[in-house]
Length: 220
Length: 309
Image 1: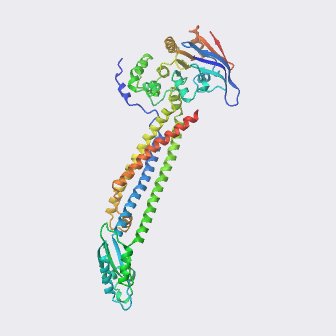
Image 2: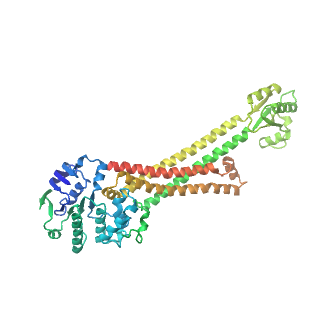
């Protein structure tokens, strides 16, 4: 599904911030992407999301060389990927419902065709009573769940989540992780960037992609 | 699944993706309103001047004057009567009335003072011609006939006046058109700056839209709709105020009729009654302003997004 071969990234003429990345993400797989803060987890997710271009190496996404994609091609691929940002990136002037429905709306779908779907998903993540609330009045955990719901609404083939449990207490973090597991069991590949070792230890058998010293190693 | 549950119906009308209420948006609405107002005033003034010019020219075109120069050893009264008779016989002339000696003295009074005795001066005598509506006067033929019948008689068909009026009116209309074009160009620049400002202010929204799979066309359309809405608001306010300004000016000139300044304004513009053509021009300017606002911003956003690649 995703393959990185000898991928390196540098900004302008600076040193490489990531070098010789070689790994793949198989269909219907589940993995943590981990490493110390500032190691490059978010940068790697941005490479996978095609919002950054590597300075060398080959990224293959859904069996296509990412370098050959034009802008419309990138957009088409992004519609197959769900992403949860560390800072949620909910739009403040839209309600929870409208934020979650956004990926469907940008595809030009009529609201009547997805209303039930969005409402059901929001109930599933425990936001059934917060449909019309704006992000400003949501708690950190509620925002997190709204951001996750927005990533899931398109039934993505690949889910990228950046520190999705970083802003919630441990019980909610475990609940959210179980939600990702459930999604994985339904057929989605999941990559979760986190530096929460305690949380990862509760899922000891899960594959880990570890970034350190600008390189990536695969465990498990 | 209760998809029509309480409150869900509220979402039937999609919320704009670009936030509507902001200080910049309100400022842009004000700028568009002022620009539309000024452009509409210029266009309305052009319509009024063009209309007044047509009226002046039509009025002058219905009149002509025969001038009879007094000459030694000739009876000027007889020459005037003969000239009037020749003029009456010409095709297109409805009437030819010689101006009496007293009336001629009245006309010269502002320059020569009262109590004038024209018999002491070699003052030309006039015959006022009225032309039939729609008829064309053959000025050259009538001039030749007058010259043959009464030596020293000349015909003035007011052509020189008509040409001057036409040139002045044309210049005024051109000036108003140029003002209109300048105002609309300035508006285009203001919309350009506002669009770029809005994009900078909404960079996060653009980023999120990209990440959730929005195409550039979709984002450009969202911004275009946002600015079209602002353009419609501003243009409606500016155009509406301009449409009210003309009847108000008409009321004021009627109220101050007799006052020297009001009479001068009235002489230039006639009345301030715009008529359907004038209001149509204002509505067109407002519509063009709103559409141009939406279109300009959409193009700028689209170009900017393409540049992000």
